[in-house]
Image (cartoon, rainbow, N blue to C red):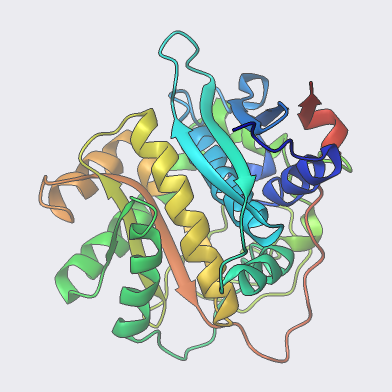
Length: 325
């Protein structure tokens, strides 16, 4: 039986929604190629943070988030996506192929599509309302449903050790001058990518006692540490620290984030603890007992209802990231 061709406008819409996924420093390190019945996802190495992410871990996690967004978008538009991950060892930048065929949208499709539209990274302090353990377990299950391994950090000792290592990484990173120069180059970069200062909290030396990953923000914030006691923490991890695990972790991150958005919660990835060799190794042994490799830590919490809605971070035009055959 001949496969049904996907209309070009549908391909464009799927990619448009997919590229709303979160990415490290909003680098948007992906390219897409559409055939008559399939989409191919490629890593865009020209957008890799070669100082801060030399192995491409964060790049691949970012692409994994876009891959999951694409599956959600396809579902909502009436197309089922069968995904083949890392299909060609000889083409390592080809991360996934999505084979599309007509299907009835799932019962969650509309809510998840709405979550894609609403999702953002809100770095303002969360309220002091605690995140219950059962909510963390539920969110972790969303990531696990995509094949990722997600562990809520609810044990007091594990939690304390994780917080200590996160703060240690935040303290160490400013000493890496090349990485800091690279990071600053993505602040107010332009109208298509990067992180606008309008969505970054005012620097700690002006308004808060908290060290911020980014300097030069304009957004009013409430003081606090990098992680507060009422914040929920979930770690995405894997037995192997390799591209297959990174891609799946990105899909899990997206699934978790969309579910949190539906539930009215905010999510902030804390990748610093994994980016610093010292703290990544200590997290592996001290928090995960040497049984899994940390890939990204996720902070979850509640934003004040009265807070203003953040402007959306910019996105590259679909025509720039999608090649139609």
